[in-house]
Image 1 (cartoon, rainbow, N blue to C red):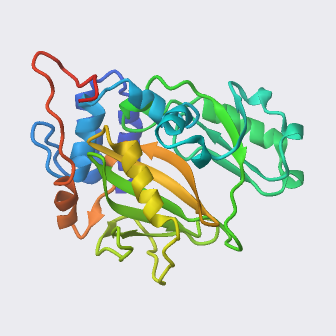
Image 2 (cartoon, rainbow, N blue to C red):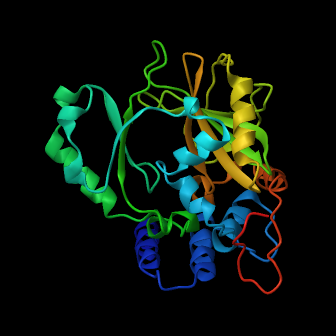
Amino acid sequence: MLMIIRRLFLRILKKMKFLPPQKYVHYLYEYTTGKKLNLNNPKEFNEKIQWYKVFYHPKILNQLVDKYAVRAYVEDKIGSQFLNEIYGVYDNADEVDFDKLPNQFVIKGIHASSFNLIVTDKEKLNKANAIKLFKKWLSKNQYYRTGQEWAYKDVKPRLMAEKFLKDGDRSSILDYKFYCFSGEAKFVEIHLDRVIKHKRAFFDLDFKKLPYRYVAIEEEIADKIEKPSNFDEMILLAENLSDKFPFVRVDFYSINGKTIFGEMTFYPSDGRKDFYPNEYNEIIGDLFVLPEIPRGQKYITEII
């Protein structure tokens, strides 16, 4: 019964988009985490992510969360050699011409998180169902879909087809997510076996496993994994891409020793997934130094 009540309340809350962002973010955070939110003096990492959503609004963020538009920024900062190959960008689902795509490919919604269709054998793809899925994606706005992640608010819903990446004999590629604070990478979250049995863990920059995890993680990486030959390169590239921002997570793939850019994320898990043990929420929060809002302004609209 309690679960039903919680789901009902969340459904009602998500319809209250008319609320000012400070109020909406406040209610959603406290409801989903059970913690009080102090936007005037945030301490924990996720509290500061909520502050980021409400007060940190440089226009460039709209470009950087757009999975297609960010490519121009990456090319300018570190070079096009780190970008994955793309086959097409589409404004609507019916524009996708499967006949022109290779047997293996990935189609993503560039305007939101977790909108990914991985195709390893085009002959087995139900194209009609895929089109329905794409239309559903294109009807969504990440800002309203979750906790009002400001950077996504004005991102145009589109689809992007890109090259399917494979790393040797692995069933799925490893994902290296660098948490960067004021242009300095502090640690990395590594994901593996997304297809079979998703595991992840945090590592320091010496590739030693760290003593914390996300509370919601079902399974951590238990076995020792090999440090990729391009790990140090990924650190440098992440720091280059993040040098303008108080915080951003920069993701890369290592494909047979070659570094491929993934995405830039300003609000990991919408800032509602705690670290465990609990003390690390504030320890990691201390790394995240928030800028001051200029006098006379409600928001930060320029990179400082």
